[in-house]
Image 1: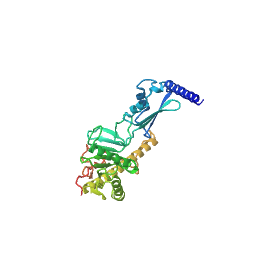
Image 2: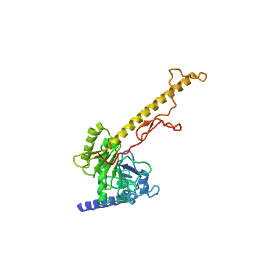
Image 3: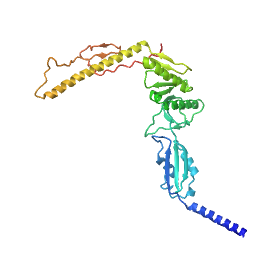
Image 4: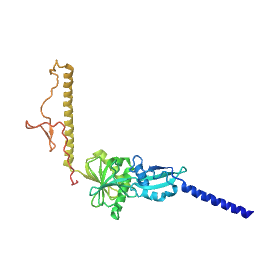
Length: 342
């Protein structure tokens, strides 16, 4: 009695197993769904690219195909071979729909090589191509000495420092707004070009990043905010525990100040002339065509004499010859800072 029971139970289990295997072999995929994650506001990877790679350009190559013919592991490896794919996971849900979960690589910095080629890098230092459709706002590093696809030795160490400096800039709103670009000099040291201020920041190597930016911020807050953003030609924070600032040449500072003041005066004069012109125009329009405007003793008149011009020496003077034409909007000439600091 007991032996017969166990024989029947074994046969039943074998039948069910064979039935399940046969059922699985005839079941087909009911569809494909792709989800791309990683970047918040944009994506360098499109759904069509993922589907195209999985279907090998064949229509309905996934939907309707037997489940046993879909090798999910190979499909994952195929997706992860794409330059913008960091990770890929594939599985079937209860409705036999193939779920494709793709994690996209996130750029953390844009790098320009010495030969002017440009690319992005992510946290794993993978080199990522630019997109023809859009660009992402990231810290820019210029002057990288190598244009290899993969970096080794000193280039790898330098790229790691680029990633770390970029990460610090991106997480701080002040430095994100202030840093225009970061240049790499011949000694593989970093020179920051700010957006505000006529100076450069000698940052040194990529070590001790937080303390260097902290000292620089204190100098901005306690010194530059009082003496002006253009007083110094360089600010050096590469040495531990100190900030060294190189002053611009005194003559150049005075020249910049004189040019700025004269430029403001010229703009005020132009605005006054514009007001007088508008006043006469409105008076003529209100009087009508049959009543021309006759200037009275109190009516301001416009002089046709040429306006004062700003000379390269920083002095103002009247135009000398009759053939010279007045320049209404005069922009002051930029004066480059001297390389010799005092």
